[in-house]
Image 1 (spheres, rainbow, N blue to C red):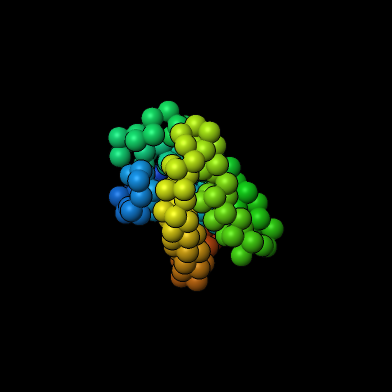
Image 2 (cartoon, rainbow, N blue to C red):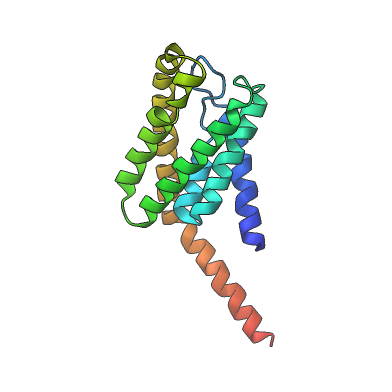
Length: 172
């Protein structure tokens, strides 16, 4: 694994911890801005890397709130990883708006469906509004971050890579 990927993994997990501390009022304390870093990584770099950051990032977020749903957080982490993977594939195929809508529906409505059987219908009804708000915030923050990154930071990074390549060739 390259040092660049390691840095983006670390940054993704760090931003997940920061985002998880920004909570959306819900009956469960783990709804927050913890998935936007995974969406950013899936948008800019690697879909798979974004999925890993989403899954492990959710577990970090749940850990910080005391695992209120116990082992169900493993299921939630898997669902979040899948939602980010689908988002990433759609995003990279040029369907950015569709990717955002599919992520929002998948994370806010489809992912909590198993909890109707695992917990109760009431739990599902109670958690969906918070997930809808949280998912919307996560997607919006991610899209804004990606836009700013592409406009301001990408040229600087490309220039740094080119400068590094030039210095490597001149030293040979």
